[in-house]
Image 1: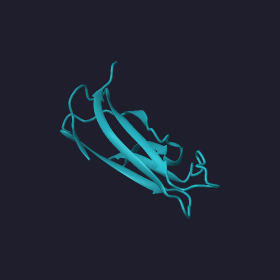
Image 2: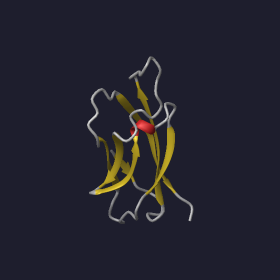
Image 3: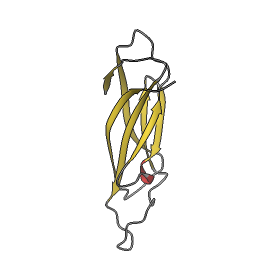
Image 4: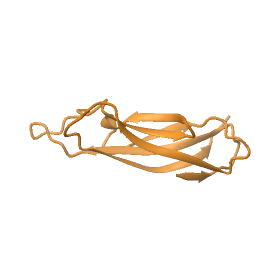
Length: 110
């Protein structure tokens, strides 16, 4: 994704909303955090991971995260970011889905 950059380049942050859902049932009852530690959502800029969260522990109704950005060089007009989901453990039967958005670029107070 690409975001136009404006504001003080040393005080930028991203407001990220993420939620997850798991249709897997255990004993006919959903088990909270059953898949915690297996799948992670990462936000990266260039070759640096700026933020990550465990998808298995995200609440169904979602959560807002504030991600502070490193100083963005003056010649960068658009911030090109990557969102990625990756499994860190083998998980047969992990049907966790992750929903991301909106993502807002904002200038943070000093």
